[in-house]
Length: 295
Image 1 (cartoon, rainbow, N blue to C red):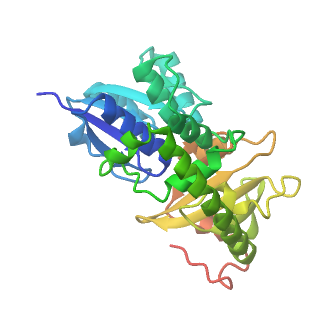
Image 2 (tube, rainbow, N blue to C red):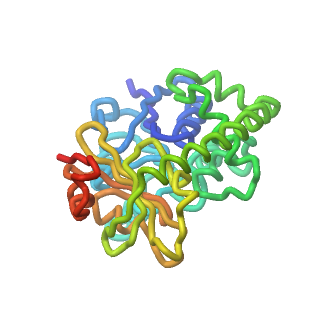
């Protein structure tokens, strides 16, 4: 008997929201979180209906294999994965069902997949805009940081996502998030001024910091795109080094560098993994003096 599985990006709110929406519209679906560097459980996919949202397997030939082994619906907005897909599609003429489109957060694409042109609820709008750096709505950042107070992992807390259709609850989160955001900015400024350093990577002059579970906002107090080309964070996770690149500088596409390194992402934010961080940090003559270790 065919089952329904949903693999969602486990590392951020856009992925959590995407998985939660799939579950709302398909209550029988089993949610499975996945992140880059995780081993894909092929046995959970073979012969089943599989949603993959805000995520793709790398290298892309694994997506082709997955599409052959299950009834796949792929909903994603990552530039490099979509480019890989179109390169294969143009060559072989195959199609993967779903929506693959840049410029919108994945959760907004999932909403569109199930609800067509119906306007998305406020929480989906704000999460989707945060994930593609559209922060013009003053509610976007406070909502993102307020929601981080809650256990958003949809495998264990679908009740939270159902409650977010209540606009009063959304505004409570926004109000709480305004205070959290102010504190976060203060802490980020102290951390990056104490721990950041400069390096050159793939021809880009970068401001870098050894920290995971963060984003480009950590560099707000020191970022100067007339002085630097990109921001770089790195950290050790599950036997590999995870490297993230960010930029807002015209003419630079960090997704191309990430793709060259075996990863991917967006033009302004992308990432990849390494076995040996000395490929990046080893070029610093003071690395050992700074107390950095690598394998």
